[in-house]
Image (cartoon, rainbow over all chains, first blue to last red; front, side):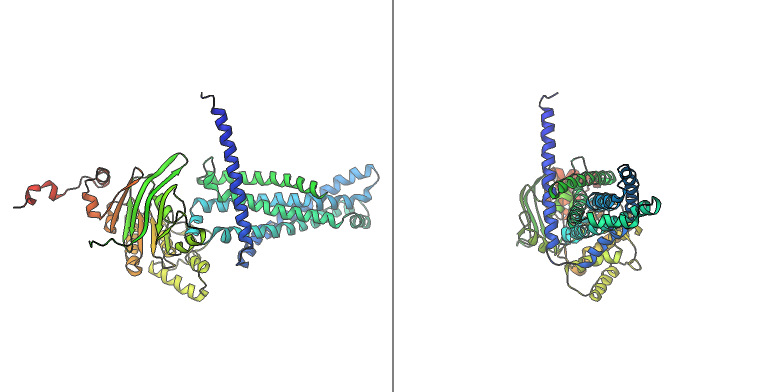
Length: 264
Length: 266
């Protein structure tokens, strides 16, 4: 065996990593540029917002309700140990608004819409539909990608807000209706402890997560043909879709930490 | 043929293209004559589609020039590229219809995105092109509901939508049976006669494609081995062309060669 082989492999992987990073960075820049460049067709954005937002509603409501219910259940048993179950409302609301709302909403959207965006664009790349757009002098960044970016950035904060509200109501159902915490105390604690700063943190997170999800999903699909592991056929599409979901989920958690660390 | 050099719509000069460590095109020189049909033939995997992708500006060469109407696509900026592409129509190998749109929207897309025409005018123009392709009652169907031949016809209708000056056909009859292939050739002939576009065809369908060709070019060993009329191509002495013709069509009988005595001047 050639003794230099392992080093060659390491070098090759590093170059591949840099190449992909650079490509994705330029891709993001081009997408954002096309987002602000006129014209601004409304219909494609509404259609994408419907796909990413409205069609994720059920799963968001469902997970939001159960997250709030679990938080209330766990919180109640922990807080009663210290005789402070009156803080249940604050605990549920702060956990949801600052952390769980944005993160879980984003993870649900990754699973539902992120994977679909990646597969859709990957299949379009595979079947030369993106080449066909370019040959018709239609810019795929403007026509195909910009509406998805705008829809992602707009819908994630809204979905997060719905998740938070449903979660708080779920917490109310368990804490107040089932476990007999005083309803007034539940909401009063929330009014007293939740500040604009907390809401702002949730909002910033959901905006950034919206961008991250669409960016990673669309870039993975768009550059399917440049995948080093060979990105063709149905297997190529399935591989990049899996990659996109894993990478988006990890990126969301990493950025969640970073934003929290910066804003706290 | 007149002594004057015919006007070239597209010229490839010394084009070299590598993918990773593999050199696909070594030194491609090819001139596509305006208003005529140039057919590029060659064995699979030689890079015929790569030549078309260079002409479309979808890939850029490592070396050489791709001149389209005088502009060098190898160095063209996006704006110029898009301006040139407005003159192009493409029928892709697998047609590349937008599978989430119905037939009507597929064909209407270039007009909706690239022109400011009203929806009424667009409807009329799309109807005209679909009728030209003998596509009736297919407007609301999705590509997945169409047969191979119908997909190609929709693809051709879409390619011709902006009345292009040059139309590219990448393996237009692959996967079609003989009668469907003939149908595509008939439509090609009809539309070219009516619209007068320059055609570049990449095909395997030898010898049938020769009937449509004004010029035939063989791509082998990363180079164009000659561009000539179909008759001259079939009788060429160039060893690679001769081998290709014999492989695809069998030995060619040439009375001038086989029965030389009859042709000797008295």
